[in-house]
Length: 285
Image 1 (tube, rainbow, N blue to C red):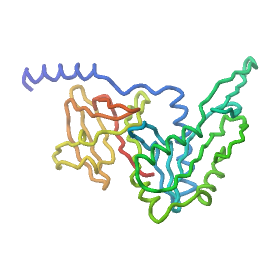
Image 2 (image 1 turned 90 degrees about the vertical axis):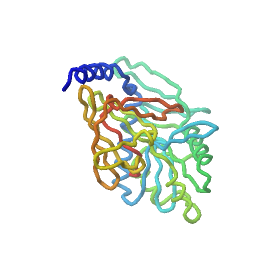
Image 3 (image 1 turned 180 degrees about the vertical axis):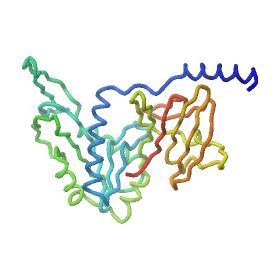
Image 4 (image 1 turned 180 degrees about the horizontal axis):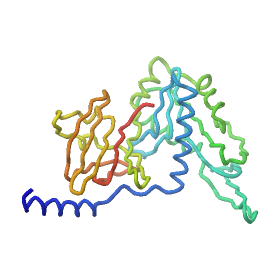
């Protein structure tokens, strides 16, 4: 290694160390994600023949939204909003009043929570604007019952607190769509990509700009639209990328300072691969 190359590597290493990572996840978001993880696991076990997309991204001129879970089962679509709320819930005109009793002092705490039914209705409305296929989307709100004491509501909307009841409704209830419309609609829905920083326990659900993933490797130039995931091993001045294709073929490439753009929460952001451990691209579960 020449002296110029040595100092170049030292400089690049310090530049990489100062670059931004993906933002930390809030405790509330992390808590909610655990509920979504458990729901997906239970649905896959109870409904092995159904197709599931998680964190469906919705972007329209009228606004942006995200669906926690979209299920395709027997020519029927089910959009599920997951709420992992604690305490006792009392429905009001525009949402829920959450009542929790402090286990140490016995004091009653109340907090207003926005209506998940209205949130889900808006997301479905925008999703139908985004995808011009006439398909029926059945809305469901699932209240994770692990720390839920009870619910008081007179709504006629569909909601559940038990996984078995939810799975039974998806299998046997709901409205079907005409012909292949449900399948065509489902196939056009875009589930989120994920960025992970394993050591810090951070993750981000987003859409990764596919052209940023076009790498020339010793094995060829894989199509960024056929990539399943990318595992990244970090060194001081470079990164080794293992690119795993949907057909299982692997490509390897070394990059000094690569960046990717992602769309998250209505805006584009850029992140360096030197601060990301893995990229998981959208999948049907």
